[in-house]
Amino acid sequence: MLNLKTANAIANHIIEAAQNRDDLKPMTAVVIDAGGSVICAQRQDGASPIRVDLAKGKANGAVMMGLSSRKLGERAEQQPYFIQAMNALCNGSLVPVAGGVLIRDSNGVVLGSVGVTGDTSDNDEELALNALAALGLNTDA
Image 1 (spheres, rainbow, N blue to C red):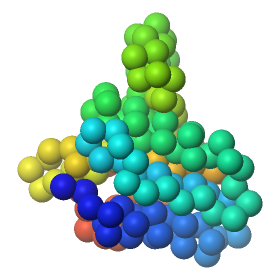
Image 2 (cartoon, one colour):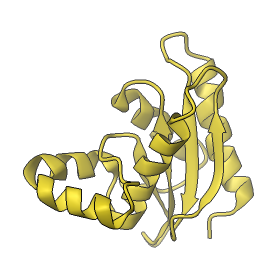
Image 3 (cartoon, rainbow, N blue to C red):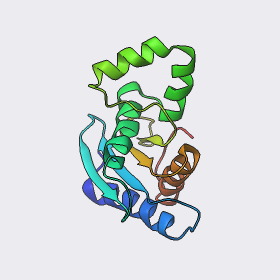
Image 4 (tube, one colour):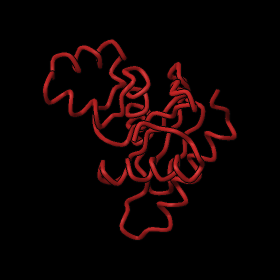
């Protein structure tokens, strides 16, 4: 199970890493559980309010589809109507661009995911992956 302490550690790592870099815009991180419920959300000072919904959409898409949001984006290019249908089933909370990363246990079971937004999608994903690696958590990457 993904608990509040771990979720906060993930989000804290992402926000602190972003604050230590001058090349990034203000970041937002949302950690959700395997059922899609938000455990924690952090928005760096200066990040626009919609960033929480964007980060949640990246995380939610990853959990609901069992794929990183980068992989969902790749699938959207090949099957746009399918991803559009999945987004409708997720009540519009599926953002198929990099920055949403699954969190797995040692057996590969999905515990939840983290969604990051604020800069380029590649930078968003990098922050998410670095946080999970720093905390010894498993993912698909």
